[in-house]
Image (tube, rainbow, N blue to C red; front, top):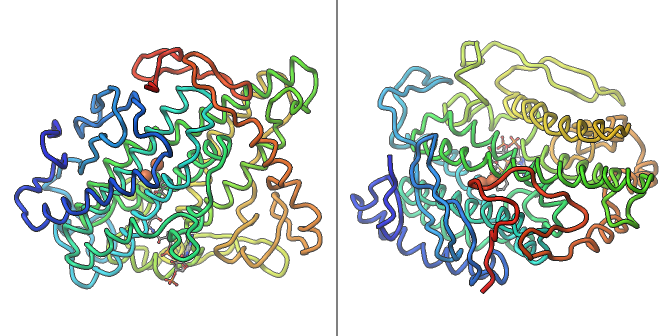
Length: 471
Ligand code: BYC
Ligand code: FE
Ligand code: FE
């Protein structure tokens, strides 16, 4: 299915057939552009960026590459093609045809999920607003902007659902998406991980590795939804998400490679004076981003999640591939629990543990890239290994938020935490050092000293390609 770009708002959902919807979207479009110009990438409006634009929603060959000025990017509304045979895969409505309209009793839950999802998208753009000024190369600058325009499109995806299916409430929600801002003390973004500025590129790569990965798991769960337009929207968003996580994984991998080179050349682990980021510091950033992202899965035991599951509006990751009754009325799931000062496993009703199960899958998936980073280190012959901290470490949501632990998950006192936290999380010194490395490199083919060049290409263009033109 080829997408139509002749429309003011590119789409494959026939918005022309619905005058009220079209009006609402056309009214929202200039507000979105105002927001982009005010809170999107700073000082970027005249840059010509070699961007990928979706031209079809098919799995293969959906992308077109060209230079675009970002305010002229064609943000649109794209859903994967509908499958008229699709049936609800789980919960009490299992086996029924999927919904094209929202049953009244699920309206508020669905609205809340869509608003929460939508809110994260512009939030991430706001968080990354200043990063372009310190890019390590044009290749990286282009990847940052690609992610930013796609997160903008993800906002469009959720705003479309709100405006098409939730009437006046949805139109108000769409406005509010542009009124809450990351880090705003009065009107912050909804989820905590989206209220901190991403102020350096090590944080950016960790964010796209760990936090965009929450996006992957949440979107995949929503892609199972009985509400078909939500499912189809999320399926298409997932194809874009893959690139965001790729940028994170390869970004960290390239930093690790460069650090290992500097360690080898200078015969020391302490490579700061040679302008590299020592592996210990990278581990601290990993600890921080992993733990903040782990919070995004909610409480271990959640009646919200149980209700979403029962009613069919949010499923499990890979629901159709799981072999069970897809009802979860009498199955169990084992979770970690605190018993005194010990962390033990405990069997709970599976339906209450849907959030924790998703967090489990997320942690498994997070480990894969970490293993690849460790392989780089071992190939250099060094013994250092990155480790994903225990899920109890540094948490703000869920039962573990009441406790302080080591990265290994050992429960410790407040005074021990105060003594050791600077060894586990980036301290002011670390942040100052990392920030000191953030000097822009914008000459084609050149790269900052703290990161190695990419091995891959973008649309077969080499690293030396002029990915961004400054006119
Ligand atoms: N922060 O029953 P629970 C992405 C609240 S990332 C603050 O566990 P639920 C992206 C909760 O609201 C993907 N509050 O909640 C990445 C509830 O409040 P009430 C984003 C929190 O609803 C990078 C109470 O605690 N998508 O796309 O099952 C760049 C009880 O909790 C938090 C989604 O999140 C928190 N972290 O789970 C760009 C998907 N956690 O009811 C983009 C949509 C919990 O007591 N959202 N609370 O007032 C959801 O599915 C759910 O809202 C959550 C929370 C999984 C987030
Ligand atoms: Fe997104
Ligand atoms: Fe993303």
